[in-house]
Length: 116
Ligand SMILES: [Zn+2]
Ligand SMILES: [Zn+2]
Image (tube, rainbow, N blue to C red; front, side):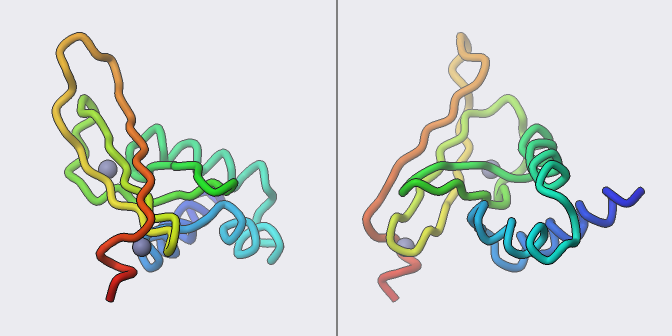
């Protein structure tokens, strides 16, 4: 019951910010005393399994981004991560017939968002 509220708070923040680092999520929810670290990580893990968010690790930090696509679980995921502004764009393409899952992480120096 309490975790439903936690889930909603985390989702609210993610839908507002779109992409958040694990560090800033920890500052927001754990350092503030709202929930402990185990709860935060468990909820994030659940969101990943439910295809609500994606996770990417780059520049020595973990980032979580809201899935922007239609949630079709049988598809391959491609995450384009910008190392300058930490923006992540996700793209889903159809999975090759022999694949069970596929996740590609592409790092770019700049993205459309930071050139503005
Ligand atoms: Zn997605
Ligand atoms: Zn960028």
